[in-house]
Amino acid sequence: FRPNANPVPEFTGSHIPKETQLEVIGDYYFGLGDQTISNLLRAEIPLIPEKVSVKVWKTVIEHYSVTDEIVARRIMQKNSGLASGDFYVQTRVKVLSESEKRPAIVFNATLKTASGNDFENRRFFNTAGYYFDAEIGKSFIFENSFLNELRLSTDIGFFSWDVQTPDQNVQDDALMFGFKLMLRHKNLRWENTVSGYNGWIRRVEDYGDQPVVYASKLSWELRKLQIFGQFQYGIRYFPFNQIRIGVQIPLSKLTPDFNKSN
Image (cartoon, rainbow, N blue to C red; front, side, top):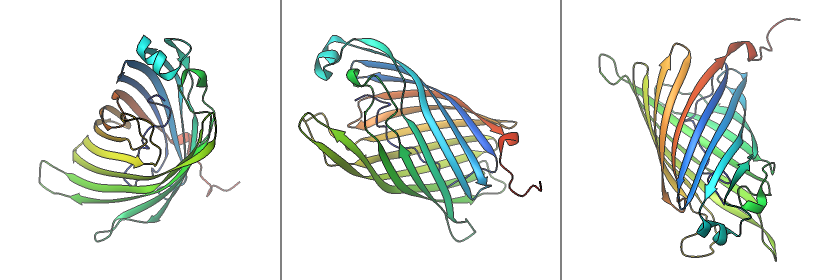
């Protein structure tokens, strides 16, 4: 299946925002005779600012183009076309706030729905999945220095999804993991992340469900907007590279305020 079908889950580094955030993202994937251009919409709505939030995202549409060899290998119906991806919904809870001596810990519970299409061309899975993970992060602040902040964070969890084959329906279970280093200078941030998951299904030598990716992301805060670009490299069992550009937009008027009187 293809780059947006069952990607390595992203993690934030144990941060929940104060106000609603909307991300508009464009991705270009290339590799293994497959070129995919897609857009991703992602929104996080804090129910309790910096404590509890709901996050939703979806690949709204993707355009793909593959070689004849890939069509034959995947038993596809055509070389190119349009598809729409799965809808994800995630609940996030901060279980420990960061202090001078302790890290922040955020617990996530995520549902992956079977809402994608173009299954006959192997673009998305026609089954649902879920994952639970914990993000742990700690910042180190430097005064009177070119480097203002260094943040270390990690992610660990459990990822499970249904796999349908012609002769059976099984559940694939995987251990999720991730490590992130963030460096900040004023309104510039540079994140470097290695992440992946380890499942148990194997088919042939060049296919397995143990993908590992490396991502380098540069963000620039312009007033309240955050503009970012990212390059992702597939290290193992993810034979695609990614170029991503996007913007994060704060939406304070769409942030729930349950303390307001009626």
